[in-house]
Length: 284
Image (tube, rainbow, N blue to C red; front, side, top):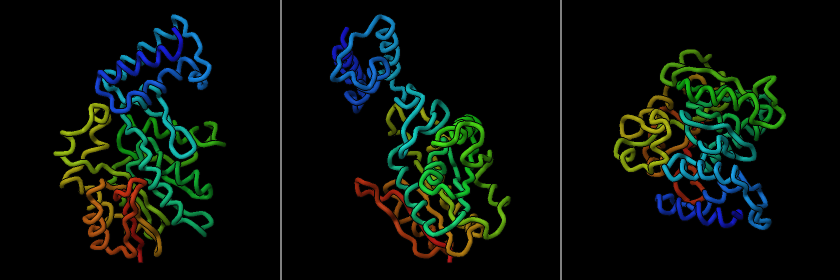
């Protein structure tokens, strides 16, 4: 079977399974067996490649996340190892890394903390954009922590496993502030759980395969913001920043949480679709 025929077959199968962007996903799966140039080269796929493609298509039709099937996913200009037990990196989260890096401009060796780090995408993203940064990534889940350590060792160019790009710490965000020296950090970042119970019930099947502890938060999705904003303020140097990813309906209330905790210059930054995505505030 030619690659284009295989693509049409996989696309129809994914459409029938309710996959939202079936054509994109089918193209990615075919590429794993036919190579990057399959669309114009249209090579023949042998029985081994077709059997493997059938296996991958069946997993995707069962609504397993495409990221898990591939085992890797791009973020900024590098790739992260991902799989069951860790939140899939998303393009929206690149904005958090970019906004964090902007707030390190002019600092020679800034100290950065990434809370609820998951795969490490945010902390590693800041390290990629600001190589001089000294980044620590905190993650509680043992499953996610394995991916964090793997990515810290080899995801960024120039890091081949001999030394990590960031420092990985396994711990609880609701307790870790006690281990931090006062005024020791220039930037704190977090993409914490923020999905409400009601929203959890409406998530796509793929998202339900991701770890609930990385998605759901108490107090209508606000529990982590309500803790992080006041509890981690003492660890920031004067002029240091806290920046968090938020759900698109949470901009007003999270800004209010920041202001009540004592931050100034609080602002909400929209994503490429114009929806509230990042809230940032500065320590006076």
